[in-house]
Image (cartoon, rainbow over all chains, first blue to last red; front, side):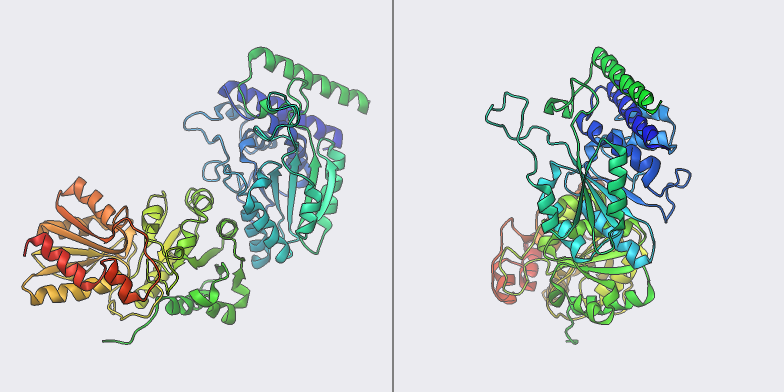
Length: 288
Length: 310
């Protein structure tokens, strides 16, 4: 896929995930939209995977540590061919393989169950260490939310990854600057504005011994360049600090913490789809 | 009296044996290797030994990641920390996915070597047996710790292995360990004593004393608390009519709780539970701790006699 096609795949993830959330009646949206372009780039370009063999031992592992954005991951998996796209409308329904948070025992393609925040990096350390023990060449990728790095376990894992020089581990921080509710600014809690969930993440990860690469998480070319740099590091773990926008792509969702998770009305769905379609049209025109 | 052997020593030796026969086996340490005797592996098989620092939450998560790629991680730490500090991690990435992680919980109960209540744990059985998919095993002596480890290595799925600290006699010689099976150590008709872990050693002494006092007690050792040997528990209740449970654990939710649940459903029987009575313990020598907290063989004898009104 070209970068422009990947960019459109990101919007396709947004549209289809939003439809699934609308169908389910509720779901996380803002954080799905902030990582949608990166999910597209990962699943359609960067990850060494085979949708026909979801349990292939040599596959790259991907852990969505910010597990509440499951519907974004499910959509990426479906669009990539792991299962029928129509199944996305079972999201959050009884008996569904598409649980509210990713469940590795139910859906092939999910490499680790997540949902309790701050837990995803440690299994990633285990997978990367396991690859070294088993002399396997796969890479482990872990996508972190900027809110969940408030959990102490993240920094336990960061310390150990560095201590074991896990150069086959790549973390991605979806730095969208909003968490579920957050801290107020001088404008108070009634305002939409919030303090950043994490201060100076580049300095923090650097201090823990990680190589840090910043990028625009909505520009797939920039993100993929960061992936190339991060995966070229041979001395230890690397993290891509991706600057993103919560709710990216839909005017009334962007930078509003309230869209972290909420039901979406028919009218809101229609407007959001229209805006995302228009964004795709603009991409096509740019290419022409 | 046979030679005294510590479960932790046998743990370290058996881990080395497992490393030699099973290439999937790795050992994760929470900076307690010279206490848990995981250091035997660090010395003999350094390529299988991974020190994970003083960070139990990450420790459990790393184990899950290792298991997910086909290895069999054994996690060695103190029971007090392993069962509580990383409980959410064990719940979400070990038990819920049913990954093949073995939790070797050392220094369980209250006989923890002058550490006091922060390092003692008397509710770990209750916690661990409430997690779906988690098996819970508490060997009575070092030999059974070894045979249990060999069986646990062959079993695929998460296991909480509850081990004790100090040297103790061997009473399990010749007894096979089968996960989920109780072991009848003595037949009897007046009262059934059901015990687990190191407390079985005290129960073993107690039933001999009871015999001298004219009480014919059976002794059923339950090294697997989950899945519990329901048939053996019901049979013990049916053949005697009253049951006394013994454990170095709280009377809430441990073996006594499990037995009471089973009998309430299958064969309502009078059950007396001997264990810590919802209290924290403290620092002190083992004999003094057992005495103060009512866990000696004499306490078992007295509880049995009270139950029988003799």
